[in-house]
Image: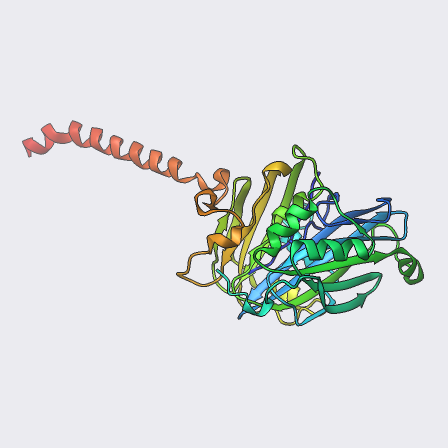
Length: 349
């Protein structure tokens, strides 16, 4: 199974990506009798000046009446609206250009989880009914069942995992009848954007393995966009940092020109990470510090401190330095030999 996440943080997660190659359902909840499949979910969470814009796109396939997905959020969104039409694809293109064309967060505003799920915000975007709820894992699970979702066996544990840090969840429910009225068919995706004032966000990674077998491979692309170079801390293995650089002007201009994306700043830092892990080992999140000189909070990884690990550059890309060291040592040796051979002549003069 291959899922792609675009998390511009400066999330996925949401959970997945509309890109060149297909992606299967990874995470979320399944409704009706499971005949509708969540094919792709793409996420970008851009974090700038204390506000996270969380953009994700849903694509469904199959037959049935309703299906949905749920995404943990770091705090309460002020609004949920339709996102940019091609922002996620543009980010994917940035790291996979077609060869023929291009050579510790304070979440006091989230509040304490109520005994029963509290609906904070509702929005209707194309064939999606978006609901933001606040509650503990049990409360959100009960709300989901009451609203037509079927929970996978691991859902209660995963919901508790997230509710312990933030009791805010965003549920997206697909209505097949409304999709038919709108002329939406299999393969059509709907981008949504949640605007979330929050401190340093964490990226939900564990949600990607929701409902998957323990040995099922989870692969995901994670994009982070931040004002400055972020600090990154993962709660386990299976994640590598492949790009970490100042976002180029063309990319930011392209993103800014998309629908509802005019908020994109002139300068941002681009980080591109890849997840490749069996679902059974994907039991952590990614903590992010978007403040220079401030370490990410290990609590935001969802695991205890001894288990966390700093996310470093991809070994294949980062290990050029041994070659440079070897070359330098070789040159030094040649210089030493030449100097030694010249000593008699030097002494003679």
